[in-house]
Image (cartoon, rainbow over all chains, first blue to last red; front, side, top):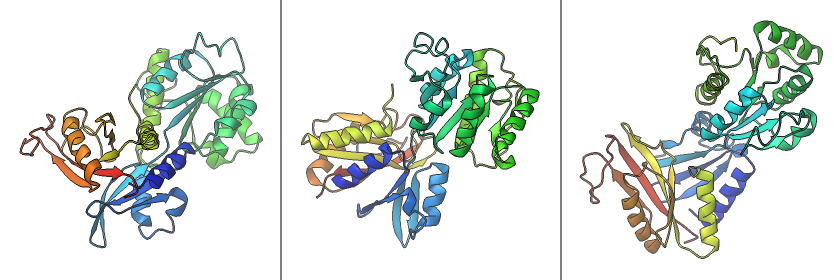
Length: 236
Length: 109
């Protein structure tokens, strides 16, 4: 790898843009392809497939053996609500290599004593979220039960195309939430992207178990094809 | 805390800046139950210091030795490790898989 290829690769990754490095494993020839340039690349079909799956691998093209090394940005988890479930969810997500951020304007909840080792933002979502650069490599969960906090946060997440958006609350609570968000201009298609009740149905009872159910659902959305069916949801 | 790939590649850049010879070893193919997926990487500098993982520890020693040769020669190498222990380095993967590791120098030559 050339020194400037390495520098460029690190710069793209720091900016949270996907990159694929294509290496001819016989000659050592190498090129770096930015996400934005994939569509116009001769190998675009293969590049696109590997990026979607987040999978590196060998291909053969024009009689050459090429290794496609996919560098997708590190997944993030943005948690709205410094609540009890969040105290279990944040360290679990960190152990799965997510960069975790907790947002809650209620400073009594968002305290470093309750959330050691987690970046905390004790601000309203309209202030806290824009600098976090929520993107398609972000999972987003709204856990406050408070429409004043959850609703604007969810609208922000929907506008940023997060790979996972979940909200805590029963079916009844969620139906009311959908009515409110619709009244604020969210489309049916966007609202259908919200996972609620949140988490896979594993019979979770305690905050820690609910955290496992949430991370299981997030993992499935990160790793499985978009149309793969998930099992029925819990009523957490 | 495990080193993530981005930390590993930043370390490689920092080593370059401080004048070290650096090699990058990447898992390019796996068969059977390999411990680390394709794309997993290890960076090595000319002190023999390394970061990252290509196998969960089974073959790193051999990869580092080969990487030092690659840093010296500048010529990339493909290494293969399997459970059969028939490789020149006499190390294998206890989990029964086979992996192929591409080792290249980082630099402008």
